Amino acid sequence: EGPELLWKYEQLGVGYASAAVTDEKVYTVASIKDTSIILAFNHQGKLLWERKMGPEFSDNYPGSRCTPIICEDYGYFLSGLGVLYCFDIDTGALQWIKDIKEAFGGRYNKSGYSENLIVDGDIVICSPSGKEVSVVALDRKTGNLIWKSKGKGESNAYANPILIERGGIKIFIIQMTEAVIGVDISTGQRLWEFPMESDLHSNTPLYKDGGLLLIDGWRGRSVKLELSEDGRSLRYLWKSKHLAAEQGDVVLLGNRLYGADVANKSFNCVDWKSGRVLYKITRNSKPNRIATVAADSLIYCYSGDGFFYLVKALEGKYETRGKIT
Image 1 (tube, rainbow, N blue to C red):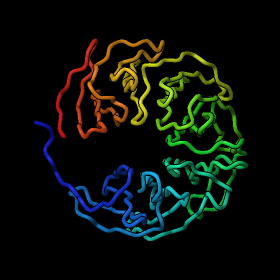
Image 2: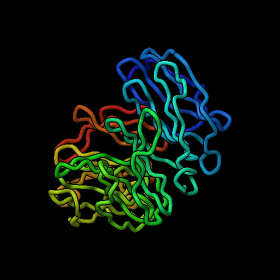
Image 3: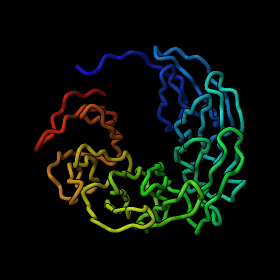
Image 4: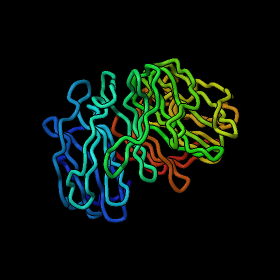
């Protein structure tokens, strides 16, 4: 029958942000009349407060992009125009603001800045993507610059960054238009880069035990790399055409990857070690936009055509446990 509806809110406006959920509240960002709005709900769906922040991206695919990041007493989000906001999580009151596009000579592509932020300790990390500066770390309580990583002319893509640890180094990894890059967050030093074939990456890199998976959905391929034990170099492992979603990410359960294959209109199970397809399910329409997450060994798929699937991955097949629209 599908899950029971607990609550809903229908006055969000437009945008692409997801929800940030804490023990007490649910936060999201919306855009109403080209203005960013922070909203906070309790777990019963009651709107606790909403606060206007500033202008939001209004050109190609208008609306909010960045899901709020909540850390202790503060929340953070980046507008599509490149303005970073820090707000009080109890009231929504603005604590500080930083225009990273203006401050660091940043550039955005035709759909604006579309990445979530990374917060680690007392720093918030983001990528202005300028000719001279690619990534910056700011003091999360003041917005002051901690370090900046020199750019090589890359502009931003649409992929969310990840933060991993390898060889005692915390590494900020993000897919830009021309390459994926790794930056040591203690110094801002660029450790490595790997060229990509496309220029519009929309999928979050996936990391496990030294393995790094990159999805290049616009060119129809995925690439697995291996980080050296000290985290300072990369080695190519395999390339596959069977994990190639334009958007929506893939998930890893055990040693199996699950995600969409645009070219073949299928949702595939791929071996993490070899890149070999183990099995798949084929659809009549292209599954190019399937938001995919996993919990409790189940896969949750929200497709671009409005269907929400709950899937159990078995040894040689998928079992659909439920579907709603």
